[in-house]
Amino acid sequence: MRTFNFSAGPAVLPEPVLRRAADEMLDWHGSGMSVMEMSHRGPEFISIATKAEADLRDLLAIPPNYRVLFLQGGAMAENAVIPMNLLGQRRGADYVNTGEWSKKSIKEAGKYCRVNVAASAEDRNFTYVPPQQDWRLDPDAAYVHICSNETIGGVEYNWIPDTGDVPLVADMSSHILSRRVDVARYGVIYGGAQKNIGPAGLTLVIVRDDLLDRALPITPSAFHWQQQAAAESMLNTPPTYGIYIAGLVFEWLQEQGGVAAIEQRNIAKAALLYDYLDRSAFYVNPVARSDRSRMNVPFFLHDAQLDSAFLKGAEANGMLQLKGHRVVGGMRASIYNAMPIEGVQALVSYMQEFERTHG
Image (cartoon, rainbow, N blue to C red; front, top):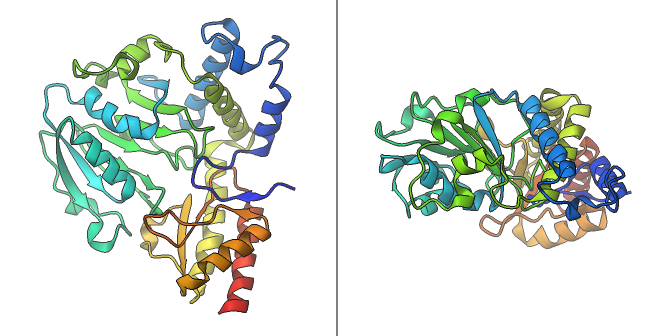
């Protein structure tokens, strides 16, 4: 039996996807080639990429006036690519600061434009999402940027901001495909694939057509959305194996009943863990209940000196990578789409036993 991997990313993948990839490793569909050996311009890989995009469009109900780009560089690269592609004739952009990934986005964007931090959760140690009535938006901003799920702090937007005619841009790296989303409410959705989509190395960008003509002259061709859209994400060699695995994950999601069905599973998994945390005086989750992430659940033991024993015991019981991010400490359970509810049940049972013996 496989262990339960609670890593925040690169993260657990569905076992059927891994097994299928293993079966097809040396010979994809009788082609005599591994996907890793294929020309990205050959008919075999073109068919893989075309189906992956079609399945993603179906899963997220992406409107036809949006382009899907399979790029490289991760969300970190997109932090620079976004202002390059969206500023146009404007000089500034709005950012909402809800944690570590928001801070990285703000810092990177500041190299290219004037950043207005429209709201920040720093006053409560990034444990909530500032309500929109407290935002101070710049009417001349080129766009409004949010990180809709903070992987490190476990804070998630459970609502969509209304930014009017100003495009809303969202880093959805750690919760895309985990819940239904109205793509038409956003100008740009982007994220690294290594949480709910596939292996590290693939970056997903979903961008509305009318935003493709705003790139600054300094924008590198490989990161120029309009040029990549015209080349169907193949201006340069794309991350072919990452796209292939993503396509298998999309097929797996469809077999599970799509995003609506997986969302219900994610709600049940998160509720199981949060309900126990709320009943326990031994553990604590600091995030405001209305803003808790379904994907990334940080928690702390009442005595930090027990952290090492907790992690050692968890590993001995087949539960890996529960250590919290170095910035915040404690523990963190990332329970992405591919984490079965049995993994969360095993974690809660272990936490109960650890509390009984150490509380």
